[in-house]
Image (cartoon, rainbow, N blue to C red):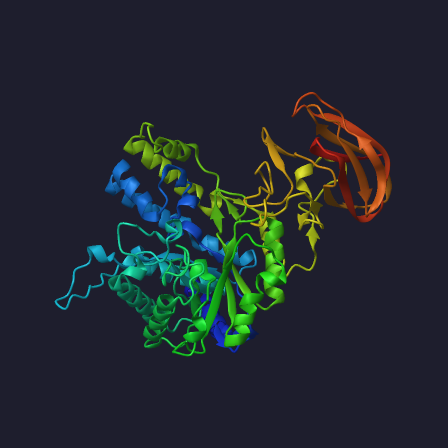
Length: 585
């Protein structure tokens, strides 16, 4: 009885809170709810419902798309095992625990990337009516999974914005993203595919029209198609984009037949950023509950990089949402988010988890899965059906939240818009104990550390620059390598530095002992505390091997009481730094 009353009470709290915050909606150039202007701080679900080849790590074996991956599994381990894998993948990849964590990390919204195939059949498998129109078969399981997601969001007072990431036929030549198959008609080449997309969005709108925790409908993710034959294959340079604006308008009008409360988000061509021709269509039926979106990858974070979008916002008196970004360093993340929020633009990061450094949850790929990918390479012997099944099930388990490593450095960067301090200690450092050099402060380049390369900007010769040369442990510019179960700072260069925030209970003198190595170069460092030099031009030993460690002792350093910022600056590069400690005299 008491449990029932408690559950009812909690349900009432969630519903009443939702009614209090209210629907997201448009007010001139702002997104608002009942509490006023609202900055969306969102995270994308990645490959939960659409398996992009790069996140599945299968592009190197020519399995680039969601459908190609599933087709490969069908051929390798059979339809029955493949179906079982996908059921487990969907069940375990995104759970309430993920949403609970997202809320605790500072996100107020989630943008699930949807593939239409979880909700309806492709046109090639549908029957046609007498008049030639296709019928729509609806798949209950996909909608029920969205129901669960919406409930989890409501429990956490988060909005969910549905993102149609894979449309019927595929919306772009970038097949890795859209699951486009060149042998079949694309979204832009098929009236049947467009009809199915319209019907699907109407079905979604009918289902969620009264739910205040649904933050709106992101109609078509990253269109990239030469729709008017005036641009390149991905629609960059297209002059009118008429087909894109016409379809967005048709979708808008169809949704508004059943749902006037939810925001509709529209996207330009060229991965969401080419709005040529939109002005000619803007007054033809797009209503005052519409938001313009754009995506931002691998360009600078100067005001000029987004000014075009801000000008468009003012021209059309419509809000902006930067609905997808990521795939860069923490420094770039923090600067981008500060830029967005300074300009009253909400954002969504991509994705929450994968097998790389630059996301909140880091997936550790199982060895069996690497063996499977290797077996798919041309000329290699395929694994058995049993071994294939074990490999992909292991990969699915690796994506469970409890199996992932939480990247506190990425979380700190993504909270830069609300963080009161530019830096924070990576962890509590204890006087007298060894402090790992990779545990320098959280924060941007120039505040927590300085490195020669700290972001990937596709300008000049820096395209695809590796900000962390060793590609280990943290997503900063600091170059980190692994040694056994430990990590060390390597590839050091002149002018680079690392900062460590240490709380000292009383002023005293200490010896600083530093473990370093170098095969053949004598590195030199300078140490400062609270920006005051305490040891200048200290030579580090040549140890003869890359990971043969020796101790250098810097004597009689005064460490004041309270919070101290200890910096190690590289004067001559070439040494590797493992750990240091402060020993009281």
